[in-house]
Length: 329
Image (cartoon, rainbow, N blue to C red):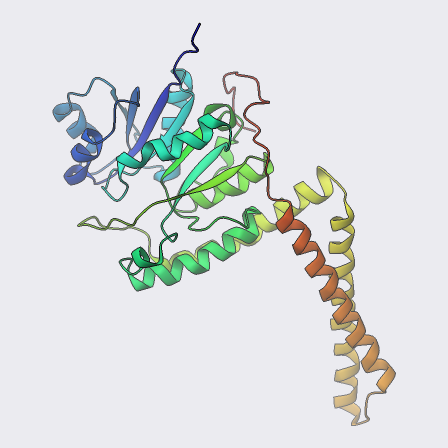
């Protein structure tokens, strides 16, 4: 007796995509059983456009009374897909930047049991990067490094890439009410997935740029995202190294921070005292501050090395029971 085919659903946030959404839907292959178009209070009434012009029986139009951002739209689609019994949920944008023909490449690692979540990476081929606008290239480099630090997925790149797929059992464990709903959504998802110890895999893809308008300003994103990344770094370290576990890396972090703080305070005090009195600082005092700083840095580097080696490698969706999500935590 053969096993039933997996149910694959696609979520498309719709906001000012009337010019591209029809082509995006038409390009989605037969391997997909359901398509959720989420009208996020679009001023152009994208949902009404899809409902009036699309004859694909797989399409379901969902509407928001008020704009909730891309994250809010995706989570509305996730909830609908889970309620309808989907196994894997793919998210693509409605502006034509993401090729629906690549969808099987995002789903395959999840169905094989190699990943819980997959995401696109536009930086895999250096030849194709040249087609990406320079400002966006530079911004993505900065955002990618900050995302590695805050999410704990040191082997991933292109964190703002919105072409993703997730196993429904993992999606059901996400704290929907706590996830960022605006442009930080994709990066915040990575942080949340790490707290679940989910395996995330990059899928190579090419950049596609047409007449669509990006609403994300890279400079503004770098500034706005910086404090959010810092917040997630603190949360992730607290969850993984002090609440969920206490390892040698936890002690290395404590020792590193303590010794660097001591070196800064002790050295700074004696430096200020030397400046005020004009008396030279004793060599022993200088050595104490220097050795403390070097030792603290070594402890921190050891912690970072442990953190890099701790990227999740074993999928979790196979160990999770198939159950409906009852609410956020």
